[in-house]
Amino acid sequence: MLVFFKATNDSIIKRSLVRTIRKRQATFLGHVMRRGKLEHLVTTGKFEGKRSRGRQREKIMDGLATWLGPGKVSDILAAVKDRDLWRDMIANAYKQGT
Image 1 (cartoon, helix red, strand yellow):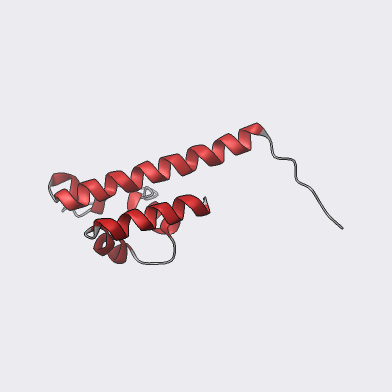
Image 2 (cartoon, rainbow, N blue to C red):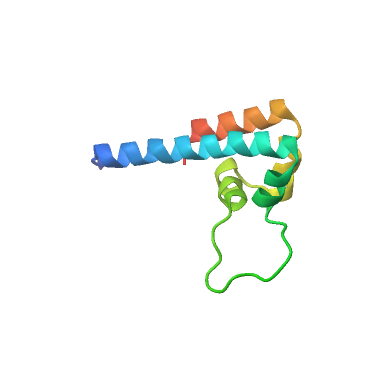
């Protein structure tokens, strides 16, 4: 028995928007990580001091790690250094969707 799901325009636009956001986050992350200045510290979250109360916010790195596929954040940071590998990872993740 075949079951067809009705896809609304809103769901398609939302998926497309999420994919575009993730792709732009990944390209920005590659740019920042290769530069290695203050933005590098901000995105990796290596600051001293107390943590704020309440639920922790989702980090950009954690979201990209799930989007780019199985792997650790440290593997992703190592892949950023090789620009061709990083571009291939982003392209493959973008083709697969969210």
